[in-house]
Image (cartoon, rainbow, N blue to C red):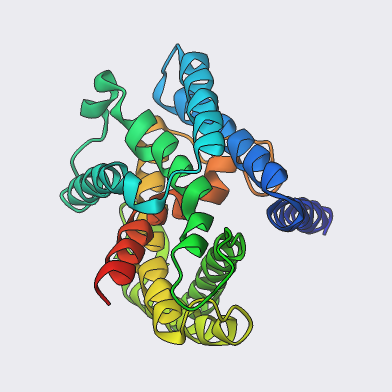
Length: 275
């Protein structure tokens, strides 16, 4: 019982901090996710035995500050998003072919393409509020990030519930024994339902774009969780850290987010330019 209370308390603090910093001001939003980025770099560096993680953390902070002051329009980051997407697809290819991820460690590409740059894309994601055609006041929409988190939580929760209730066919047992195909499909269904509900409150995106967002989150969010599970299996650890009692590390909480953001970024760019 005490373990459940600890887990619930830790989760509640995490959610409250996320809600407050995201909605209070652009500065608190930026500070929170810059801190999350540095913690993720630290945890990932320990997991992969990188010795100079602090250099990447300092570099990430410098890039974060630069983007905060520059406020670049989303279209200017298409090459960053494309690079991250290509790298993530490569990780998925190696995941299903049971190839080791260790062969990339010497290039340090993971720290940039898997963690740092996706966080930069996340920090600039609200700027899609400045390209929306249906509003007169052009301003960042930080609710975009909040909605993405809500849908990821919904996907994780209902994938677990459906999988535990009726799941019989394993999704990728050698990496994550508890994940099932039924759970994945159930998570996607309820995430799409949640996106329709969200569209009634956050009307700056139409319902079609929210549903597309939900499908991308359910698909690539699940793959992101599997990718991080493979990283941990290769490192021989259960959690990336212990900063959140009962939940593990920050990277354990954000693995789906950082993996899915580059895909969403490209989808939004394509949608607003060609839809």
